[in-house]
Image 1 (tube, rainbow, N blue to C red):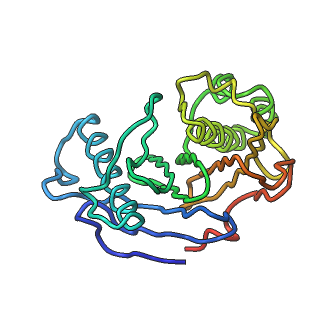
Image 2 (tube, helix red, strand yellow):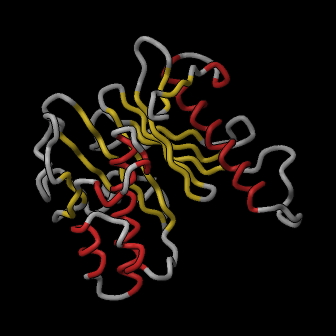
Image 3 (spheres, rainbow, N blue to C red):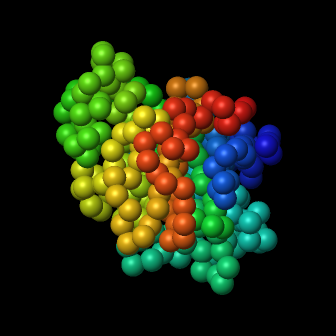
Length: 244
């Protein structure tokens, strides 16, 4: 495990790369701090201003992380996008990566071996969870609705949603397609792909980057991968390997 404590370019703090059984993927967690010139907590600022500031800081955090992999300054990281708008690095040999942010926290997945997608969500009250579950694939929606109470259903929805979004980001479409169409079901230990399409195998790993947050990383590879059957190499949560 590698810890990078302290402020990163005056924008991010508590940047951590945990290592564990997600073979071939580095996972980074970043707690976004206040940048110079940001309004103090006592000053008024619009929601748009705050979100724009956090988005900019998360993008700088991504640049800071990727610069360590490709050997350049953060400002020189050669971003470009494909025809679907998924960002990648415009260079010969480059790692795949993905970022997700929830409030002032973000997580980053980097891999030299796999296409990756990642999503993170703060656990919070969502109101009508059954209504939100209609945006999930049918099997996942049923699993959410079977929760014993509102809090359980809320956490199940957020776990399912991070899996769906990580999957959609890994294949490069994001939420440009209906999330209900994701071929996912909920296995004994977490999300699994219902089918292998075009010989592509999947692995999903859940983890808790901070208390009160849930996150899922989806890995896609054209080569042989472990059989993604329910319960096979899937974790109920990441507490065993995501050590602080």
